[in-house]
Image (cartoon, chains in turn brown, orange):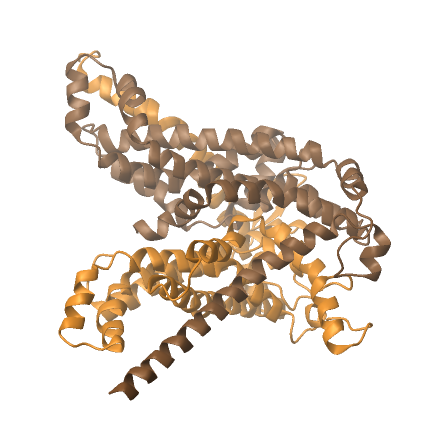
Length: 283
Length: 300
């Protein structure tokens, strides 16, 4: 009897060792590249070439100064902020309005299921399927390389999932609350602004996180649809080509690109984790 | 007709609330998807904006190209790595957290999940630098092999270049599956497990009879996510290998990008994008059918 207890204990210890080994490996894979990138970005060129792993001996901010100027990173960061802010605002306002109509405005024409499924169909569409016509269309009407020319596609791509989450959420709000407000003389707009939106705060937080991360990190559309009004990821990618040997500048640019999201994650990791997985968990 | 009636107010509100989203959606997604199908069946001239009907010419050209089959093969490698790599490893990680086999669980979960929040292009460039001659990995291996001239050839090797790509994909996306599995494991009522233990069920028995069955639904959803995500993937491989050496790590999305935006053959590019969308839809339907066969007609 004591023998089997012992072997079970041993097995548990073994399980724990394996468990720690797996998680420590994953943590190192995440932390090590970021830490290495961070301290390397302060190294002068010769130190990078000669001592790839060593900490900086004569730390310098020159890499950041030059990368910021040569790569126009400040300008691109502002562009990225504009794209992120307006596309997030657009997705939230439009999707909440649509979701409210789908969930609570039962009109006699039975068009809600058709429209709802039309939006859900967008979840099956990959970006590549719309890329070429969108690019040609934007060039023809002069929308290419404008702020609106990228914000509108970001909104359109965000809508299907936002409308799905929004509609499912608002359906759960009891009709009685809306009906009593209507009896008190409130208009539908007032019901939407004063009742639906405040109650929907959790779903709006989730949608904001999804949309902010999505727009801030998006690459392909920004790469194709802008030429001067580049976003930060596109700017950093373009920067990596002609200056590939200027490792210090590259490292500094990558840090500038990663820092905002890392900070965002440090502050809101719980909400971000929930937001990015909500589609699979709810489903 | 009374235009101020409650019903017409409701209809007008409905239209005003739905119209803006619908117009943007139809303009940016609806119209291009149909236009894409049209372009793929024509010879399109950008300068005259004329499209001459060609039928399935571009599709036959595509299927006769060895580049297409290479891209399809690499895309399937990505799908397989996602479905049979990320999902099982994600489950193992979730199970370790669920059974509290390690401490610092919040920290570990946070570190595994972190990569998915980052820009894939920046992550791709970072890994490229890590493996370059000044990179940390190269220098680490130089120390280990005691050879200051050592360089890593994997990313430029036709045989091995998909390995770092697959590795990066595992590192980035496994956290997503871990978090979803964990959320579902935590939904299992602990009293069911306790009852089974009182009845004398073994650890393995509980795992097979209680835990696994409760996760079948989520595995289907995750498989769909993995397939759809794999077919969409572009940024990471674009930044990490650009499809190279030659086209040995090219996936379908990069193949489409190359024809449309470096050779400016928009019709051929559209045909490729149509194949990507069809594959995505077919694979997702296939997963649903397999699921129905296995579990009977059940709503997920």
